[in-house]
Image 1 (cartoon, rainbow, N blue to C red):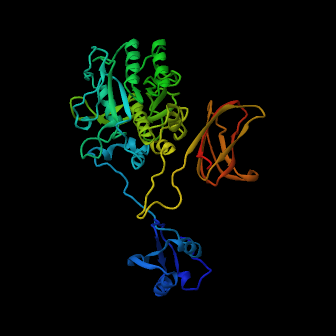
Image 2: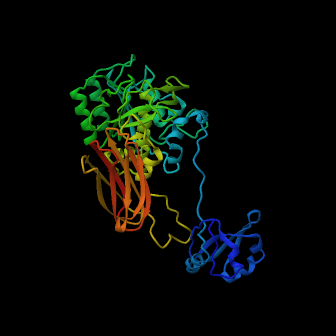
Length: 483
């Protein structure tokens, strides 16, 4: 609680803040906590305020007061009060296996669902062994697809792998049964490129990639791979990115520091598998862009549910979160989705950016929800355009620090830097205001992230390496656009 104002009579000093307020025209509400001594004078205090008491919480010595809108600012300034805020229930699914699903909680998907649970316009292609649409949690979630193995429009799953992947991406959630998928509202596009034995050819994979792009996929999940680069698959991955589809691929399960293809291709978001303690599983290949939980409860072909472990399980976590990002901001391009995933990841050894964070990724693109009070909108606008700037370069020799100028509007500024190769000396990030005054700072072994509320004006973001070795850096700064 804040200290009460000292500019008023002693009786008034016995009241203090205990809440925030939702303005309504022409009246506004204030929540006031009284001390035991001050409670006896509450009636006279409220009369002097010209306030009407509209509710009480006697157990807490709290009064809810209503004052005229044009007197709100003066009242807040005099008593150091705040307006009555809006709260809402968190969206926690009631699915049968939710209590055992550590993956969505680790990635803060349960908090991201308060922003969006997905949209059917966010189509995620599962390029795999096909998808069985029969499991209850996938009914109505599987759209038209194609079977490039048999050459028909029935991409049935005779292996089970693709159905496992689809459930992680988009299983129906909060329906009292089964599991919670990452993007509840997303539509799955099944593209069968692998046969019953789980193998296929690179030419068929390339065909499937192109078909998914041409039929509207915004995200393409590839929980598959091999050791050799294929030029046709590489061309198909480039085609996907140029046409606005984010390609996400599993890093591989060989305990290797080398990524499998297509995860190793430029422009493909590669994913390693992490455990509940934010370490890579021993089987997981390292060196990917991101990590994601590698054990997930999901739908099984033929009905039922099962646990699915591997980088094939981690990749659809990222694809599902990418679907949430696209749902929250349908106009984002593929580079913005990729930045949202990478710039908000939680640092984790063995991958470039860290373990994916659903709330952070969605928060970089989503406008905060606005509440329109009775009688019309508040006097000032709520939404504001956000901008993202990405800086890359090299720190070496005497140039172990760089600064970048940002012209921001009022609001929250976020900055995240990652450095490679990994250094034990650490990376340092600072936000500097007028005269070089430090507003916020952060540091880490090879990455750092900070968040600060700023006023409109010019700021400098400083990146520094604490060690002498040459390093490459990638800095992502997201900030409110100046008005």
